[in-house]
Length: 562
Image 1: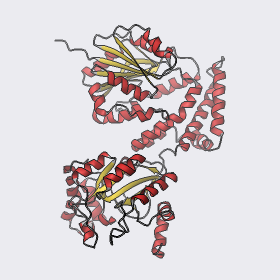
Image 2: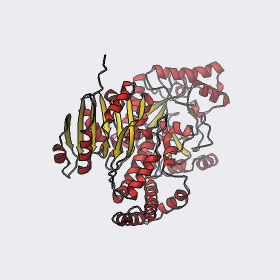
Image 3: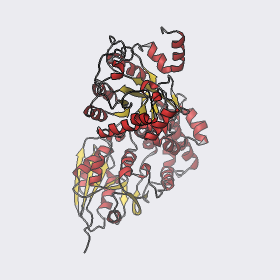
Image 4: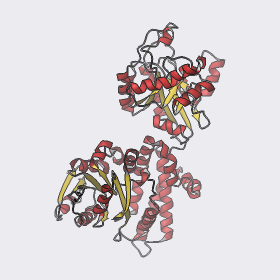
C-alpha cells in the first residue's frame, strides 16, 4: 500500500525584484516531486514589471500571480497562505533558488510526523561578488542550527508548515514588516510554533539565496530592522539577552567605540554615507573584496545600528521597573474610605500621557515574568496594576488602555461580589467583576492576577487559611475561565516570610506588595515593590512620586500635608 504524497502550496512574496524572483520561479518550476503542487507569487506593490515578467514563465503545475498594494512581506505571505489550496504551505523568499528535490525533502519530514520544517539555506553561487556577499555568507555559515531549535532558527527564507497549524497559530504578525519595521516576523511566528508543535530541521532541503542587497540598501534597512527587533522584545522580553548578544553588545569594539560614537550628533549619518560611498567605489573596481573597506562598512553599520536603538528608546538593558498600583478609576471623592485611593478617569488619562511624554515605556505581564526570571527590561519601563477589579475596569481597558496599546495586570478578589472589607470601615458598596467580566478583561489585554479569596491580611491567618487565600483563590480563577494566574498581590500590601512562602507554594511566579520604590534586580520576587497612586497625585505630585518615589515618601512622612 502506497502513502499519498503530501500536497504543497508554495508561497513567494516579492517586491521590486523582477529578475531575481523570475529566476526563483524558474527554479521552482523544475522541482521533482510526485505529489500535488501549486505556486502562488504575491507581487507586493512592485512597479518594475514583475507581474508581466512572471506571467511569461511556464510552470508544469498550477501557478497564480496575485497583485496587491505594497503592504509588507508578512501581509503578502498571509495573503498567499489564505489562497493556498493544499495541506502544507511552503514559504520561500523571492531570492531563493531551490534544488529540484527540495519539496521531496520537506515531504519526507511530514511523513515522519513533523508539523513544520525548516531547510538549509546557503548563498547561491551566482550572487554578485564582493565583500557584502562575502560578509553575508560568513554570517550565514555561523548560524549553526542545533538539535534544540530556537525562534531565531525559524526563517521564512525556507519554512514549511501544515496549513491547519498555520491557521491555528494566527499567521504572521504584520506589524513586523510594516513600513517602519523590517525584521523578526518569522521569529515571532517561531515562538508560537515551537511552543506547541513539532518542528524539524532538514539540512538536505537545500536552497541557495541569491544575495543582491547593495551596500546602500543594507544600510537603509538598519533602522527598520531595529524597529522589528524592539517589537519582538516587547512581546518576548525573555529573549532580550540573546538578541543583545547576537548584536555584539559585549564586544569591545561595540562597547568602547561604536556605541559611544552612535550618540554623537551627525556621526552615524556621516559614517554611513562615507561607508556606502567607499563600498560602491570598491564594488565597482577590482578591490570589490577589500578587507579595509569591508571593515569600515561593518563599523559604520554598527554605529548606525546603535544610533537607531538609541533613537527608538534603547534596547532592553535596564534592571529597574516602575510598578504603579491603582484601585478604582472613577471620581469617588465623597467616599470616606475609597475617596483618597480612587483616581478619576480624567486624572488617570493625564497621568498616562505624562508618563508617555517623559519617555516611559509601558510593559505587560510577559515583561514582568521575564524580569522575575532575571531578564532586562526597556529603560524607563512601567507596569500598570489594578487591585480589587472594580466594575468600571473593562470600560477603562477598552476605552483608555487599548487605544494607547497599554497592557496591564489586575488582581481579583475571588470570594466576594463587592468590597466588603472596605464597607466594614464605612465605604459605599462597589461591585467587583463577575467571571464573565474577568474573561472580557483578559480579551482586552489585561491579565488577571489573584488578590486572595476574602481580602484578609495573610500575616494574621493560620497556615491552612493562607492556603485557602492563595492556592484556593488561584483555583477559583481557573474555574472562572480565565488563564491560570501567574501573580499575586497581598491584600493591604503587607506580607511576612510565612505569607510569601504560602504564595510561592501555591505556584505563582511572583507577588506584589506596596513598598514605595522601584523594583530592581535585588527585589524579592515574592515582595515586589509598587507605588500606590492616590486621587491627589496630579501634575508635579505625580511626576515626583514616579520619578523619586522613596524621596517623595520620605517627605510625605515628614510633611503630612504634601
